[in-house]
Image (cartoon, rainbow, N blue to C red; front, side, top):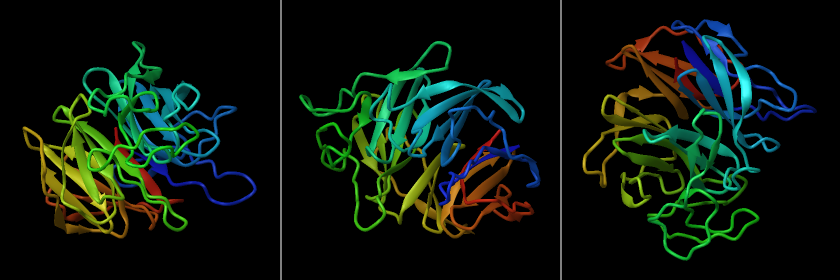
Length: 311
């Protein structure tokens, strides 16, 4: 079964309420509302989605909410538990995009508007996250938002003054024209955090102390990142790129998978020898076998898909 979040944010008198949709292995919609609808929670512009046991976590990126939400359930029905983290509990969380968990009970959240990755300590019951200490590898005597693990190369992007950390350790930021370009996908793997620095066109890697270990070659507008079977997969522009995870970590080269071409490639998921790939602009999800040959998958989607999660 495939869970899908959507772009949302369409103009109109009322915000477009986008729940998590569920599809079977052939692309048939099972439900358009995996998540319980609750008063005070506007499900719009949902982004990253992650399942841990019977807890389903979802990034809610619309301007009025800006939070990670926690749900509990099974199959295609999850009830609202509460806000896992929000700007009220952690000021660095602003327009969250993606998040990941390590093996030590910590969560890492990328926020587009602060252009940082925040590290959170997860409560024993799994229902809330609180800012962990600032990464020890960050330059001393700096001003950082609570829980900062990877800092921005441009400081003071929010109301609070913050110290800029030069690239490559710090994440690049671009605000030319109408669109802002900042941090995107994150994934914990091989005892390190991999972070998509979209303006730099690179995936960067940091150790558990936040020390910069290396980065990929430059690629065009990378967005999403996942790990499967010892390899890193990154979507960028119209391609899917990959690299083997190495130990120790350092600089690495992302190479395109020739069989995979889709306009504005986005979310990815692997399952049972199949690979699912979303287009961020074409209302489309494609399915492939283990050799990346196309497999029939009916997916007439109501909006542009963002993240995919196989459950």
